[in-house]
Image (cartoon, rainbow over all chains, first blue to last red; front, side, top):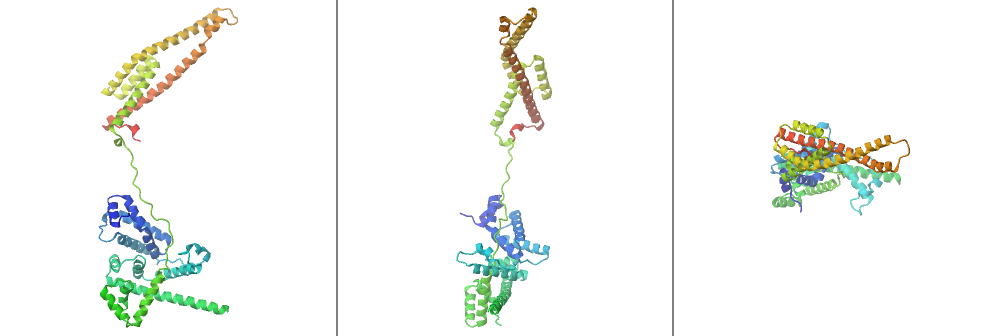
Length: 202
Length: 231
């Protein structure tokens, strides 16, 4: 029977190291995912994730429990990512491979039913999304990441980012609209490329 | 362009309350642009699901509590007392065993050295001395007997040498052989006793030094510290 976050936090604050280890085990993947999608590089995401948990450990006594523990962790992570990007003086990188080797992807199928072609298409879409997200302004990107990949409510995002509820909705709408246009444009370009290849080969 | 666009986000993410939802559904039934917008937003949300995070090794090594270092405070009092008794007895036994074979002068010197280092004799010292004197009387008797045997062996050797010198040179007689018989064993026994004496001397000195340094540490710290048991 796994204990809820509040209980683990209380025990960890009292000095129970194992409870803190359990909290980390529970939130390690989401925190890494947020850092990775924000920064774009695995090693940067790793460093930021470790630092986030270190700060959480050191700051446990100051965590009053007014917000959810996960929200507190997310905010620490976003702040660290922001500091990281300012320090590095660059926007997030996107490692887009030149081509996708189908043989390398054979073991990455989502299910046994997924064909290699579908897997390749999924990988290409993943890369396209990463590229498009990297071009968004930071506020819109953060809002979309927290909503789409971490399931936070509008109010939780507003509390975390320190902005009004209406602002969160605006950022989401504008960000999604930009993404939609860019992805539709890309799909249109690929479709015309395929047509051109088909016509040139026939 | 419809002005309702941004209200659609609550509808798309299913966070609109019942009243808001009803209002938007009513609007969608009349506005083709907004219906198209809703479809477009749902489509891009589907595309976003494709963005995967690579598998990674754990970023965190679980914290472990530090291993406690045992100190003398962790050892029960009865165990400390028993260990102290063992050290004391070992020291006393060593002292007694070595005194058995040491010449009297050396024994006195050893005792003087110990008392000079330890300072004024304490109750513990007197008790130890009392223990030594009790067994010393018995062991002195044993010491006398061994000395007598050694003297007898040496006398026999001297007698043999004298006898040999007094005889004209010739092959050894049966009597000579009888006298000589057992002599190598006697010499070997003397050598064994001497080796035992030497090792017991070393052991006695070692135990004495340990006991003295323990009591010195106790006097310096104002508390009993048995450094042998702290590990």
